[in-house]
Length: 465
Image 1 (cartoon, one colour):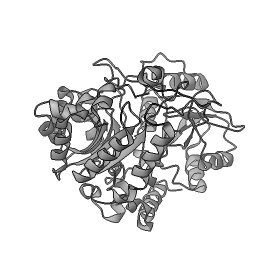
Image 2 (tube, rainbow, N blue to C red):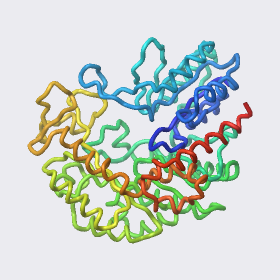
Image 3 (tube, rainbow, N blue to C red):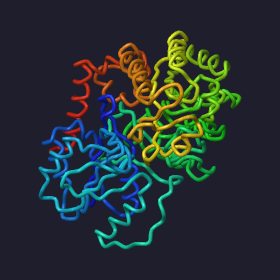
Image 4 (cartoon, one colour):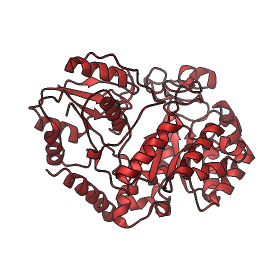
């Protein structure tokens, strides 16, 4: 193999396959490289990871790439420019030490691309770096070929035969890269995209769904997309695709409730596309706070009525996410929102403190760039400890911990996370449609740990070490 990619997932302790490494692998294969993705790396023990890696190292292997997306992050405050940094996990350090004979490049990639390190040399690439990565590898391989530029519209994020995918697993698939909206709290770079520049073609999505079904038996997906229902045309395309498939497609993804409400008939159409679970970024029910961030409808009575009606539909599952610390929204307002959600049958909830920084690339949002205009200040020697007239960053985090962490076991499994957990659930004889009925304490049980272990054992065995 020319390139080996280590792919990992640590969220909730559920073994699943993040899409990024597979998108990169597919792009490299299109350009003449041989690539092996090793999934579930954070679940493999050191001997297993090293043994699988060594099996695919040859004289032509020029790089081992490592996804940092699910590494633990720390906040160094204003000590290090760049904000949050990833910490190299023990599994990375141990496996790399055992592979000291490998003399090629060690490459970091993922949602951060920055990591703390000791004496270890890394080559670093951040998101949307497919072309720069290819150029780097071409230099190592002396290819120097004229190539087409990477395009999300036509890309093929295929899963390979060497991925050893089981039909019961849920796979992530990238529908687009970016977002047409520009929410003021959002610090992602790919916002405010122009129509037609960032969404995959209908043909490429259908081709991948069919190929995954015929090769791996896959029918369940999590859509890697900032707003699945951003336009009526897009929802109609997804419904057309789903209705033409030789299997029942089921998926979970990020949706906007206001668009689902305002696009007449869109709920019926999106159900036809296989929609099973939604992650709604509601952010706030407070009228002023919602309007300030560009989601004014979420602060209306229509929003609550619509969500309450949706929650009565047993065929779908909802997750509502909120932000603590938005302008004019008090602690009492937050707890009133929490109580309303519990009283009106919302499946699962999460409350997060507002991410804000006066001098950081980590939260380069409109609020971060214009914090004083919205009543925020940074009175302490800390680039992240914001304050407004109502609360501080620390107080927002305390409320988040109280609602999210202390209530975690009482809540059902978060809808989007449930779709990612489909693989391990196979070993517990839990069907995808039933995952959403379970409480989060499932993830704390010995049975859950054993289910993940069995999935990993099957994956390792498939490599015939």
